[in-house]
Amino acid sequence: MKVSIIGQGYVGLTISAFAAKHYEVVGFDLNSTIVSQLNKGVSHIEGVASGDLKQAIFAGNYKATTDGSEIAGSEIVVIAVPTPLDTNRKPDLTYIDSACRVIAENLSVPALIINESTSFPGTIRNYIKPAIEKYSKQKLDHMYAISPERVDPGREDFNQKNTPRLYAGLTPEATAKTRDFYSTFCDNLIEVSSPEVAEAAKLFENTFRQVNIALVNELAQISHALGIDVRETLDAAGTKPYGFMKFAPSAGVGGHCIPVDPSYLADVAEKAGVEATFIKRANEVNLDMPKYIAGRIAKDNGGSVKGKKVLVVGVAYKPNVADTRETPAELLIDALKDLGAVVAWNDPVVGSWNGSESSPLSGADIAVVVTKHDVVASEDVLKSALYVFDTTGKVKGAVQL
Ligand SMILES: NC(=O)c1ccc[n+]([C@@H]2O[C@H](COP(=O)([O-])OP(=O)(O)OC[C@H]3O[C@@H](n4cnc5c(N)ncnc54)[C@H](O)[C@@H]3O)[C@@H](O)[C@H]2O)c1
Image 1 (tube, rainbow, N blue to C red):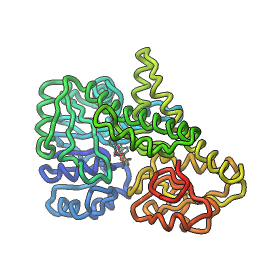
Image 2: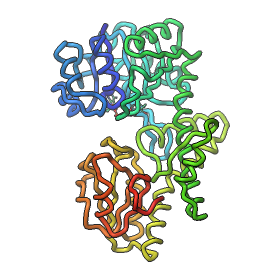
Image 3: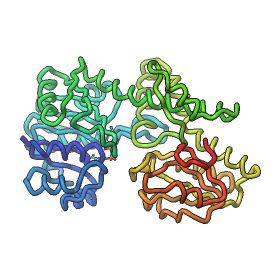
Image 4: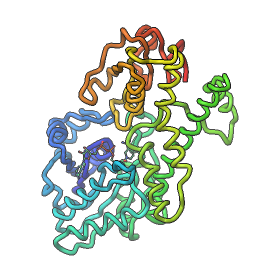
């Protein structure tokens, strides 16, 4: 069976690698650099081994392409393209729209179209299906389903195989075919009664994290004002064996999901006449953390960081990955610059970012740790500046958030 995956990023390539063990997979992406690397068997995603990719290519089970016509004849097409926010922090479905166009223009026999991109309830029914029908030259009875992706890049204990997967089709046939597809490489499939439930569940999972991270970030500010150690407080609360789940304070939230997905839920909520107050407040708290941190650092340094050399350590949004999407390090750099600091950054995992290169981990007046990769030694961070502020709780001996 031929399966095409639209988008070969974190989600699309991960699913392609698993699917290629069972199906003939075409990985379609608009980025020609990524496509040519993939066809050489070079993976750009943590969690997808280049060796596995090479094996799939060698077996004739995987091919990346920028040519939409290569998806023709697919029985299943999976959409895994970005669903970011626009400049007004509203859902931006332009990538989904362009994926729909490619599908519509190149499929000439009915297929099962599954959306794995995160979006608001109603996306498959009211957006993707009508868009594909609008762009198709002929009337085809495609089946449509949703199976939101839950992959956590870089994580080793949970992967495509053992992470429970939600799914639902627009019709019973679509639901059954979706189950058949994923059951070849997922152990735990959970059918829900409608695509909207699966879409809403995915958004709520990440909203739950966003709101709790904001809550704990507010607690960090309260604790500091009261002279209490926030991490010890959280450890103490975490000894309760039920009814409590521990979240850690941080410089904010990053990545493609936590800072973005809740706003998809807020947008549909508002359109339905319900104000998503928790989501709004959580966004505010998390987005303000870099300013709060810059203010704390200035206060500890005689009230000003003007002209001081500040090194931001770790610009990836989480440890041990090179992903800088929506990283709070960016807002922190802006906040420090606004206070007059001369800011550089160090991150050996990221290497180059925003047109600049990682600076040496030394010679700063002030260092502030946003993300602590395993390859970065705490002793080296402590030696890198006269004053070190740690937002991660991992650099013992530094001033803690
Ligand atoms: N990264 C995660 O951890 C994660 C987890 C769960 C869900 N998601 C969701 O999955 C979706 C994809 O996220 P990602 O992290 O894989 O994004 P990504 O940026 O890593 O990859 C997306 C890829 O799609 C390509 N692309 C964009 N438009 C295209 C088009 N029209 N046709 C073909 N290719 C196109 C891009 O070139 C890129 O390579 C998003 O909705 C995201 O919210 C991501």
